[in-house]
Amino acid sequence: MKVLVTGPCGFIGSTLVPALLDRGDEVVALDNLMYGGPPPLIDIAWNPRFTFVKGDVRVAQDVKQALMTGRFEAVVLRAAIVGPPACHANPELATSVNVNGTTFVARAVATPLIPPATSRGGK
Ligand SMILES: NC(=O)c1ccc[n+]([C@@H]2O[C@H](COP(=O)([O-])OP(=O)(O)OC[C@H]3O[C@@H](n4cnc5c(N)ncnc54)[C@H](O)[C@@H]3O)[C@@H](O)[C@H]2O)c1
Image (cartoon, rainbow, N blue to C red; front, top):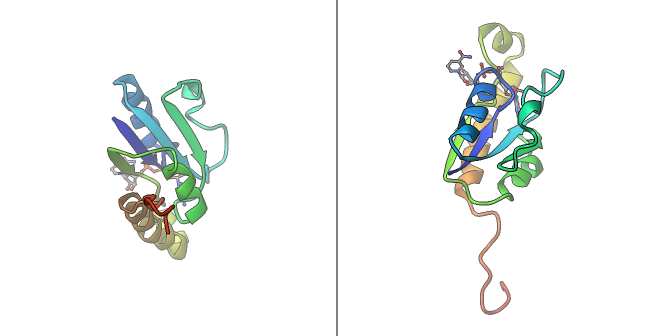
């Protein structure tokens, strides 16, 4: 199964992604690495069924780059500002990522990015 995971470098995602690869899935991971440090998924970067896209779920170009890798059979949306302290510290960021970013990716996945070509060259 081909799976898109947002927030793959977080607490949940960094456990989920290796488990998906272990069972044979192909994983495309989109994370903006907002907490810095060495990427937690560095140990699986070699895996030919793993693609990492450094980007933001709120940025159309970043989401498009992830979606251009092909058609997904499952999407796991884990990119988020997590927990009351972090959300209260920056409510605008929390709303922007948790609501707008999540909605944006969900809608983008459901929308074909490339219009089908027609016999008239796509006109
Ligand atoms: N941690 C838990 O025990 C737990 C339990 C149940 C549900 N959840 C839910 O799972 C989700 C993830 O939780 P977590 O604990 O893994 O969080 P986390 O903070 O550990 O990870 C969040 C990840 O999202 C990424 N991210 C943040 N903003 C982003 C953006 N704009 N674009 C791309 N990536 C971005 C971060 O870089 C990070 O890797 C949340 O919705 C949380 O509520 C967590």
